[in-house]
Length: 247
Image (cartoon, rainbow, N blue to C red; front, top):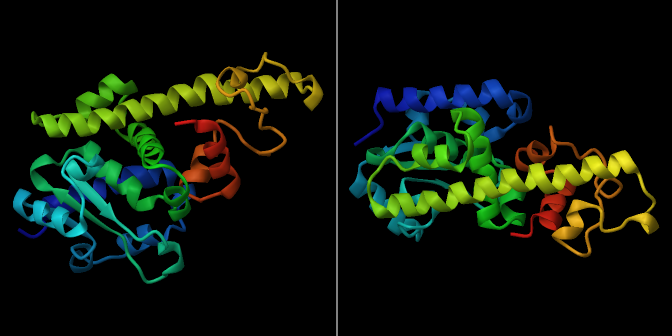
């Protein structure tokens, strides 16, 4: 069954919400700009709302398993080197029977993720950050509300797949708030020399080799570090996540 006018409207409404909030970060995203400029015919070559049997066939073609992450209800297809292929367009497939606002927004963020972010970080970290941004749009607060938004279907597979996401995003948010940014603020306030750095920093409790990141990662802040890594592929910010995430 081809996309309906309602399918396109739901998707474009979600895109509009993301653009309203993160437009400054994604204005030059070529995948987004191709999508925004697309006619309905072109849109239907990029975004696919499919029946459950057709979606299952697409899963088999791509080698995904039904219980692998967001492939339970949707999947975004891209190439690891798609930043080097200017004509390549990412595609999103949805199982129409399982689509929610949460699912659509989550996949749009995958569609917008900088290729370097996906290449350099482990899948569960990528999923965690994708959920983090998804919650900023749909308004879910914490893992309990996220789980309610993500597990509307009653199947065990659906609940199991999204439970991992919600744990990842809760870990992400707690870790950023309680360890990383608390450490940065403490380091900036105390401004100790390297030889004076002791176990008072929160980061030392997680990693004995931790060094406060102010000098190594200039410009890191609560407001921009996740967006610089996720949307722009900033190498220093991605390295910061690699060095500090530990998951």
